[in-house]
Length: 65
Image (cartoon, rainbow, N blue to C red; front, side, top):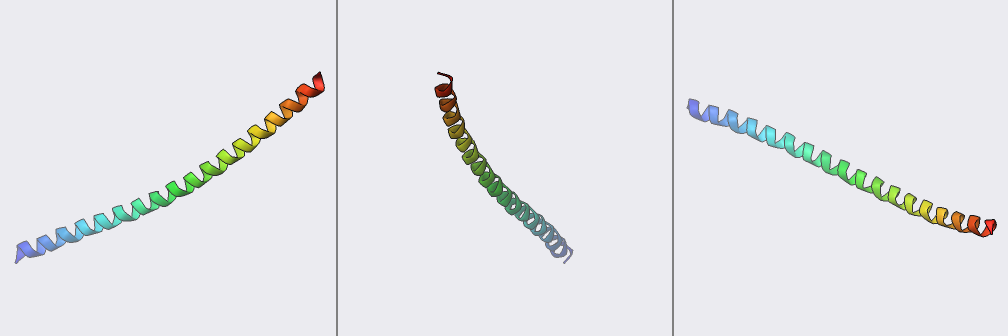
């Protein structure tokens, strides 16, 4: 009987640890998705700034002629 009780205690501890690990994994997954979205937004802003710089450089070169 004592072996069954000990087995049950260990199984509960294992289940608890797995549940906590799963919760953390979900949290990191959400964090990764948010970071990916922010990176895409920053990339779009950089592309827009590159276009703006190209246009400004072109105008400046034309004005200096």
